Amino acid sequence: MANAKQTTFTAMRDGTREDYQRIGQHALEFGRRLPDRVLTHLSLLAGDTGGYAVDRLTHSLQTATRAQNDGRDEEYVVCALLHDIGDTLATANHADLAATILEPFVSEKNHWIVKQHAIFQGYYFFHHLGLDRDMRERFRDHEWFRDCAEFCEKYDQNSFDPEYETLPLEAFEPAVHRVFAAPRKSIYVPVEC
Image (cartoon, rainbow, N blue to C red; front, side):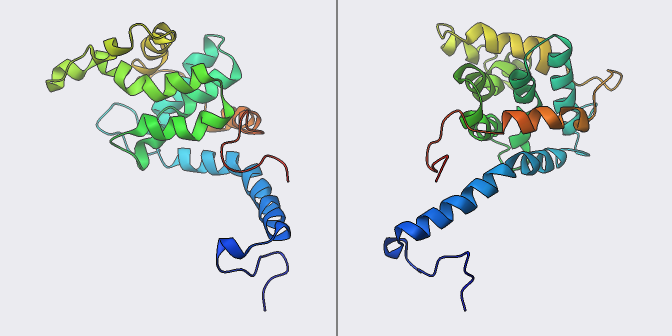
């Protein structure tokens, strides 16, 4: 017997308005738990240093701590915290994954900074790997070029310091919950059913 809170169709084309309203309600509840899932996934960065002097979680926390200490707004700090969250699942394009997670909840500017930060970060090390450190120059005329360069310079490239006084993940949990409280835009799932 089917659960009264679930649909009974086996092909989406057979669903009714009531079915999709029910699914919409489930989607809203699932969405409300997104901040907790994001924080849980972020904690997966703990322990793996990737060869750096601090683990990936500490790097993320340090990036966010630096941004917060510099007086950046809450959304920017959350972007700083999550900029490398894609490292665990998208090692070849981690910035794209982080940007995708953040996109519905942050400004276009902050989304662009997160999405492009890996190329801008390359300015500090690509030449050591035989790559073009000036790859970021393809974005020179973009309105947020300087903002992304500043993010990498002030908060990202220097956040591998085991001696830096870094805030714990718990310090950022309320901000993550507020930023992810409601999407600024919805691409696929209606915000209200």
